[in-house]
Length: 85
Image 1 (cartoon, rainbow, N blue to C red):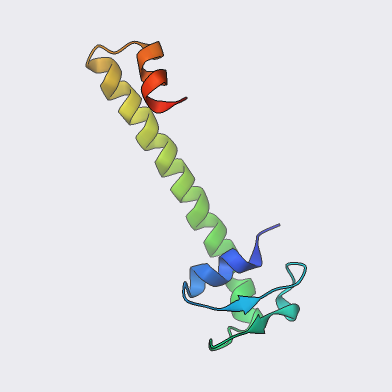
Image 2 (image 1 turned 30 degrees about the vertical axis):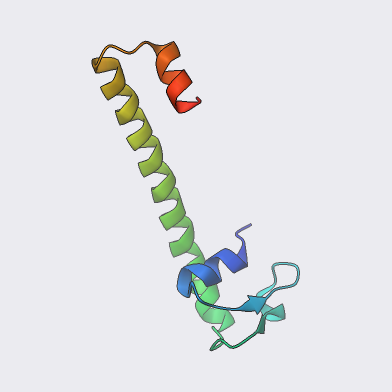
């Protein structure tokens, strides 16, 4: 289940609110123009896709970095010591 607060922050990083039980109907807004439950629900899929893309890109960049370090002559143990994984 997607964290509704993270979706809200994806829509508006400056939003101030409180949510009970991850329920869009329980949102209390503070000094922020409320975002409708419909808008929040419609952005869940977009948020999940963006997060998956970020993760994939991060993993690809990590693998690319490891390859470049190996090309420089570092061993797997040295790379592990540098990267912690």
